[in-house]
Length: 616
Image (cartoon, rainbow, N blue to C red; front, side):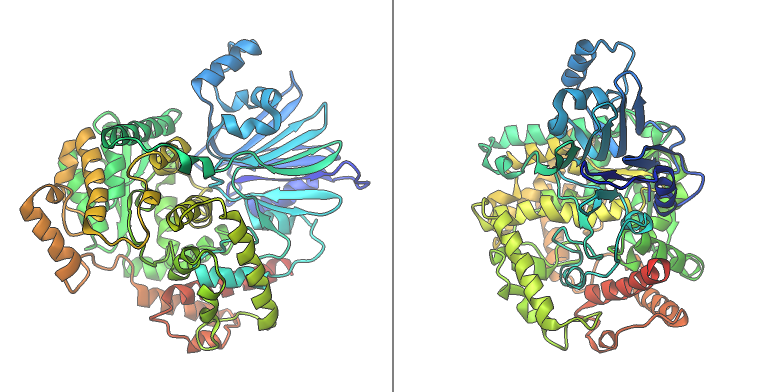
């Protein structure tokens, strides 16, 4: 996994870091290939290494400015607003600097621990002032890409990958965190900032760690709470603001893109909306792709659009040949690169991206769009599980999920005491409850959960699992877009989570359609994986078609894009062949009703065995 890693001694520590050795050990755990570009900085008290995606050959994410004795390393990508950039250039007399990352040392010199307030993008940042021996480690306001930390009385170790910390040799003991495993199985990913390894934590969003002569301090430099208190814009102003914000986000992401633009074009509406901001201006730079079975909507529909719009498109077909030759390798790699969070059934994402990553330095997708633009009552799925919905809508009452622990339904993966586990989960739920006290309604709590937890833990873990190949970007995870959206009348926090009102749901469809129509009207006429086009939402005949597909049709419109039964059998057989011990309870649970939990459990069994073999 591309990213950053390192360690910093606290001021009272009497030990000395072997910086070069530490960086070498962490580099082995951080990089996927020896060919990846990297850089290091190390002395007796501080060490840091960064590794870039395979698609990037120039290490623009590492800056060592000798003039002011400062080192900065970035995991991900950052933007500095033009007005702030111009002020820095003038204040520090820097006419020759144009790259945002080259300006980071000066931005930090000016704003210190508050630097995150003046940055946008998705990033983890390490900065070291050599003269003053001060260190800053922080992430973006939404904390999209995970950053893991381990702290003792002497030092703090950090890394974009849990394995960086395990490989550092600086952990006293390595044990699995059973409560985090339970979280993962209950909610499809851990919803607190504990991790699958005890004493390793995920850095919460908008957090800065500062180490100076006084010690280490941990503070939050921004909260999302204020965005829910914005005065609501009118209908027209809401539409115009969202349209402009999405357009700016897309153009900002493409500003420094070199080569082609890798674009995920699916049969869904999110990618269709992003595409409307790319055509016709970026048409010749796009390298579009999608994956699925040959007859799935995620293949057939992009083919139709690409032919009509003359786009460069590459279909990644998931067939028996893929299952036989590629699936298992990519399944295991997906689990490892996502720090144990992603299921083996996400292997096709990595398979497709690895094939196409050489085409571009950036992957542009529509991820998280559906989670923003869809309003009304949420349905439990792999992204937002039923257990999560029940927990949040209950006001974070532990009783809402307690029934899940019945002996025949919950696959405990260890011999840990069920009573101890129960107490620990109760305490964690109480911690969450305290965090969400400032949100006035259940709708606000659920909306905030999407941005503060789901975005990081599900989508961020997904994106970081293929950072070795290319950085993933989406205008829907742009902080400026989210701020505008939460101030609009379309924001999901303004609707009751119990609402199944057809007019509420239609408002979401109309927003999608109107945005696309305003930017590239032809795209509303193409069919989608929903079984109808955006244009169908605008006329009576189309509305009848929508009603039929939503409520009358007995079978799913879209063919299965992945051969689930075959994948399950292959992965299970691999575990048996490798003598991986599978808890007996996994053989007893109802796989049909608990399919996500079963997939996650098998994936965790593999990851835990891998960690045992490598580090225990």
